[in-house]
Image (cartoon, rainbow, N blue to C red; front, side):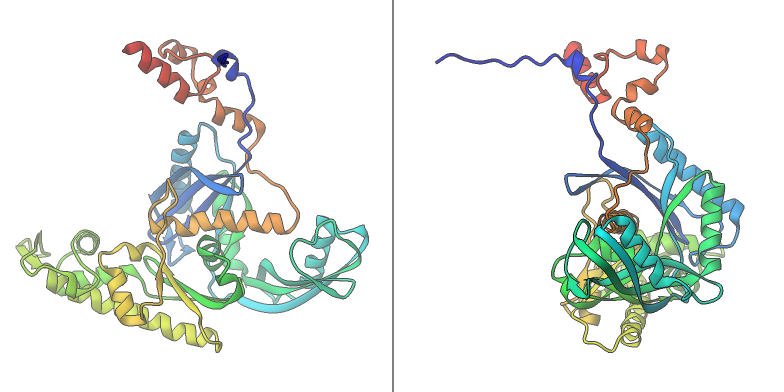
Length: 440
């Protein structure tokens, strides 16, 4: 049988334009750290291209208290991610505090001539909120509950369907203007354009969502550094949310007070040595540290874990009570996420306190395998779904940025290019492969 061979000219491969599809960047502004994630949406999947977490400055309990410090922190974080990507990030999705968020049922109508377009949908949504925002409040989003075409309820995508009239019934979510404007002003002063704002609850659901959850009532608890966010959902829609003024920093303070150490050492012990449940500790395991009087003390894991366990139990109890306040409906699921879930034996404590039906979410996406990134990644997923449901197609990068991402070689100076043995027009990956072969 004749054999057929295929020869690929790698020189010309570099001249072929490779579409990177849609690329988005999110900034999750927390009290302890600012998380930045850039991801690509391709073939209905999310691929993280770059991520970075930087110490937050000028932020307290999610609110901007020193804009200059916050601006510099955001700039530093964006610079790191931009260098990883090979182009400057210019547009972002940003998280905003959900303090005193309000939820209101709204309805809006749009006249249609022929088939429904994204403009018709946008008109109906705008009509639904017109004149309904309270003074000193700003719109975050409208979560559509149902669509009616000529009075008939319709499921799924409504774009391009024939109609004379479109009605949208939904939940209007708004927060105090000061919550939004301070964040947007800070981000814009860092040289970025804000294309979307997002609440923690909306992002968290987008990250953990599945088809079963879309049909039930449940809650998501995000335990952060200074606060704990509790959100309730019904059939995939955010119905209510509240932020509790308690979080991981309270554990740090407890350890610092009880053992006479500074709060930074308390945090280190919590993250590296303590267990969330005292049953899973070793009495013989010791941690040596200098106290506030300059004395060397030795702490055993059991006594440290008892302190941590006590405070975490309190946080979980507060979260359970808050869920009952936010909704009177039976809860079908509870999902816990946030950076605090990374503590050793946290799952065991939750099962004992709240039952084994509770789910401890684990962030498994390549490039952000830490629960502290869950909200930032969820923000991107939320935005993609929102744009898709409204019949819009959008990317946050330009063709020039895309070319720089696909062909990082073009970002190098001629001197740097001479120093690398690369095949012209091919990315670093291909160049390094050939370089390695020649060295052999």
